[in-house]
Each structure stands twice: as structure tokens, then as C-alpha cells.
Length: 96
Image (cartoon, rainbow, N blue to C red):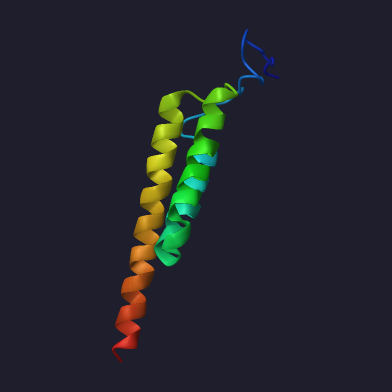
């Protein structure tokens, strides 16, 4: 079993497994992007909250900055691909 290490200045233990990319950041940005496309009035608030989630992962010491940057990009891009495909499919069906 992996030993839990609390480095000086860190708020939580370092993970015993690989942390790349940040799933929390990816999920936060995927959610924000999806809602942003359907409710633009919430975009700024949700984007700031997603950024806070990403920052918190670095601040607590469970991720390196690169982990959350890549997680944030992956989450937003995956959401863009899925919502774009759904919108194209909806448009295609509405033409029938």
C-alpha cells in the first residue's frame, strides 16, 4: 500500500497514483461549456466557478498546474464536440 505523504505547505496528501489530467477540472469545464451554449446569461458565472475548481486542485496540492490546464481544455473540447454533434443532429432532424 502506498504511503500517504503530506509535504510542507500542502493542504492534503499527494495522490498515490497518476494525477494527469485533472478530472475535476475537466468535469467543471465540460459542465460550464455545455450550459454556456444553452444559457449564455450564466456563462461568466459558470466559467468563473469552473476556474475556481481548477485553481482549488492546484492550491490544495493534489495537482500540478499543467494537470488542471490540460483537464480544463479536454473538458471544454469534449463538451464542444458533443454539443456540436447534438446540435447538428437536431438540425438534421428538424429539416425532415
